[in-house]
Image 1: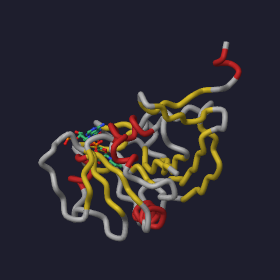
Image 2: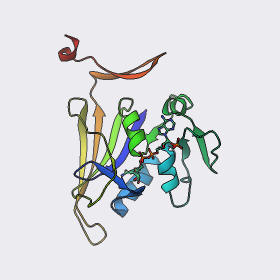
Image 3: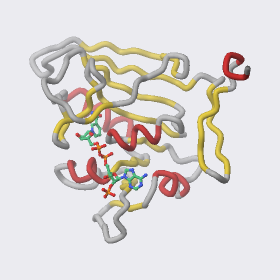
Length: 185
Ligand SMILES: NC(=O)c1ccc[n+]([C@@H]2O[C@H](COP(=O)([O-])OP(=O)(O)OC[C@H]3O[C@@H](n4cnc5c(N)ncnc54)[C@H](OP(=O)(O)O)[C@@H]3O)[C@@H](O)[C@H]2O)c1
């Protein structure tokens, strides 16, 4: 099972200068609750943005082209495909960013665990891909009102891949296949 987990603003913005855009303690708690005990996969830049390195009580996997990298508490693989090939079928894998890894993982993921933030960051340089409603079906939505600890409203929204958009794995790579009638003609 491959899940993407991300927090985005109203412009799909994810980050600026390798940092998150909003400080929402409830979102950090939600992230911890979902990912603890499971596997997290991230790009090298996202790993380097973590203040204390590898996140505890999770299998940390970092993707980098660099062959010389070694991080305490994390495994390094040299492509997303290689990383996923080293995960077992029954492992719950969370893709935790950043932008480049989300783009690659979108066609492979079974679900999206999104935090949709009702605000726009003044500056951003990393963006999440658009969520196509023909591919992704909203399954749940939990709204949170702004309060003294949270400067804006936000919602935890889960999407599942529609069954007519399955993922196929072939020897030449991995691709998302649209088997809906409209794409067959
Ligand atoms: N809002 C959120 O939920 C959220 C979550 C995570 C991150 N972010 C934000 O996203 C931004 C970072 O995103 P980003 O796209 O700049 O960086 P990134 O995806 O975190 O890392 C990019 C790096 O990952 C490695 N990589 C990616 N794909 C690879 C592949 N197929 N094979 C080998 N290596 C690969 C490369 O490392 P090498 O250069 O070492 O080869 C690449 O430079 C930051 O602003 C961060 O705060 C936001």
